Length: 101
Image (cartoon, rainbow, N blue to C red; front, side, top):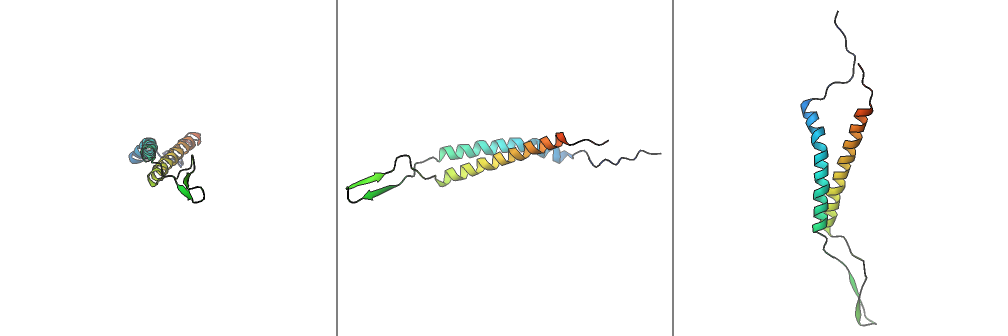
């Protein structure tokens, strides 16, 4: 008689293996690109106010708004970090799961 396998696990297909191999590189690339975008768009967008009683403008030191380019770069970097966190959790879960024979 033949051997009956009741294992719920299958070998991952080739596209699935490729995706799990490419995912960390894509996440790292997103972090690097996002950091580069945020770094290159770091123009100072501050504020000033005119104080009419002292006849001189007031400029707050160390107070600046984040430009839209910096926000986009940081968002791309965060997405890359989320991809890396997902991949790390997925790999850890695959290693920790018991193999049924």
